[in-house]
Amino acid sequence: MQQPATTPLNIVVLVKHVPDAQFDRHLNGPGHILDRSESILSELDEYAIEAALQLAEARGGEAAGNQVTALAMGPAPAANAVRKALQIGAYAGVHLTDEALAGSDAAATSLALAAAIRHLGEPDLIVTGMSSTDGETSLVPAQLAERLGIAQLTFAAELELDGDVVRVRRDGDSFSERLEAPLPALVSVTDQANDPRYPNFKGIMAAKKKPVTVLSLADLGLAPEQVGAAGSWTEVAAAAPRPPRGQGTVISDTGDAGVQLVDFLAAQKLL
Image (tube, rainbow, N blue to C red):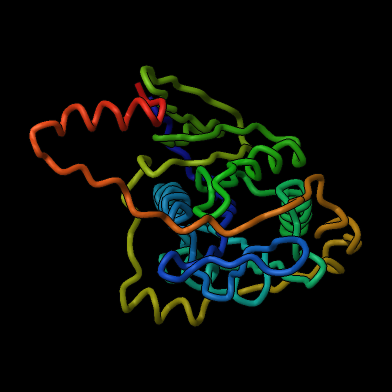
């Protein structure tokens, strides 16, 4: 049985700005960096925000001293992700931005985010989406937990706190498992974890008054060579646009359509 708890929670939610799917995606520069000039909050991060808000509200919300801080890393457009998180309901925002961060891979990103979280003060819980909708690697949450030396519970379809223990349900293809870990911990949640709330007019107006802290590498004691392309463990050697889709094969039924279809599938080595 879940035990009641009144101790305020300090929760950090990671949010990311990703290219808007309504626009074509482009790679820029020698590092093949994804163009994020038209960016939005990663849809999967909305489930993380909702999970954090529900946990905080169960302990009395902001009025009871709970903290839900949305943290984003990236250039100026990343502020849009923080702003959207505040409109949804996060209590405060942090934007880590520095020109040297451009081109950071998952390892360099987790290094910078870990430094930012330490700068803010050790949280009780870090909540993330299961992945971002652009890279979809799911690497950063695990690497971040490792750098901070805390437990990680990933791909949670259900999340609850019992005192100072976090419990999750994780669903596989043919099974479910329940895991738990002591706080502090990191949890990544799936799109099955909850139904995210949407910003209403009141939330949009309230977000304008919520505090947003802007951090640079200098604030965190990090050198430029520790992040970006110089601090990354991986390198994109080459990238090319996906070739345009060609016209498919049209089979006219003149009495032998079945034979034509079998011949086509055989030629494609699909039989």
